[in-house]
Amino acid sequence: MWKKRLIKITKIILLVYVLGGSALYFLQDAILFHPLSLNRNHRYDFKEPHKEIRLGLNDKDTISLVAFQSTDTINKGTVLYFHGNKRNISWYARFMPYFTKHGYQVLMIDYPGYGKSTGKLTEQKLYDWALKVYNLAIQQCSADSIIIYGKSLGTGIAAQLASIKPCKRLILETPYYDFPSVISHYLPIYPVRRMLHYELPTHQYLEKTKVPVTIFQGTKDILVTYSNASRLKPLLKKGDEFVTIKGGGHNNLYSYRLLTEKLDSLLSLR
Image (cartoon, rainbow, N blue to C red; front, side, top):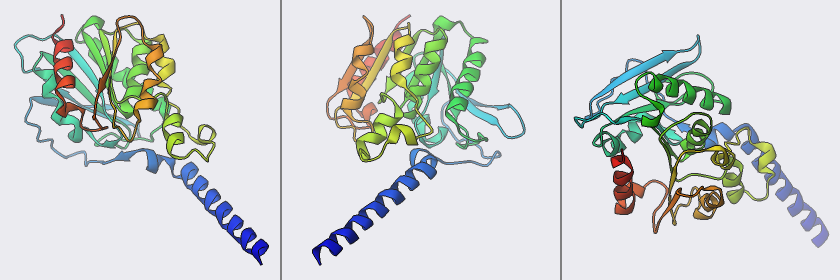
């Protein structure tokens, strides 16, 4: 009797395992990315001065980005802001005054399927689009006036760009070592590294980055754990910074003075 029950339980466990693994493999885009698309005629109602830019690449791919204008009388340069995995530019626009008040224009891109951007999302396309935004910025200011900023998902994109293009500084908010390590933390029973279509190896890009790097990470981040982000510490150069925000989560670091004061200090540098 107990052998039959054990066999039955084993079969159920295996079935659940296979179904879970299949869901992770075939539905990983829906699990990892949470875009909110917008009609191309949607009008942004941002309070800050801004300009919408659309770059049509082909019949399927269109890059949508917003240029938030500096509110200072002095124009110091441009911040390339690569946002996280949820919604679109509208969700992250509330952070723009932290940059524009210091004399920086901010270019924020929406990834394929986010906001008004169209096309199929792939890891290579994230890098390619980031490069196009960089090339747009370099037409307006010199490389030493460009700050590359990444938030969550955007940290891998930002780090990759900073590893191949010159800039003034790289700033990463809640970065990950790589995508598989984040998912493996929650699903250790699966060979995640073989299953994911996305790697986004931030650690590899940091090793190639020559410019100053500042990292902000909270100790209570339950999405990208502090231990995961801390794996980047050994890769930092002399003069780079890993700023630990005690009690900080994944989406509330701007409510801590340590981050805002440190960011003010960085953006005030000539």
